[in-house]
Length: 177
Image (cartoon, rainbow, N blue to C red):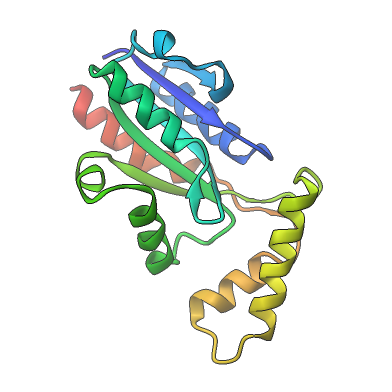
């Protein structure tokens, strides 16, 4: 099964995960900006990874469109972000806002905590994160998820770990054999 990992990375966390996945699967890798309909047609499996940005998986719509036009490729999606993976309710909301019910059932999707790098963020993204942190700080009666998120986004951090790719790798290996 000819496989490619396509990634869109703003601060480097998604790129790191994409490289780890491609290394583990011994497959091709490409940056999102270099992908077109003619370049993906050669692949049976496309693994797409990108950051979560305001509840959306950045670039997912374009990848879904390319796959729909290709018709022959399967899609696996992974998203990265600063949010702890334990924030299951929030992750479920994110999946539902990025996929139709049918896509949720057909498209394997994985979350891998990365981190925050305020120094590599654009001014607008930095502003959004700081505003979100302020809103969380002022909120009363926070859930445990909100408390964890508030602590996590105070400053730059790196929580990425190669172990987070294991479920995706296991899934791919199960469909290849």
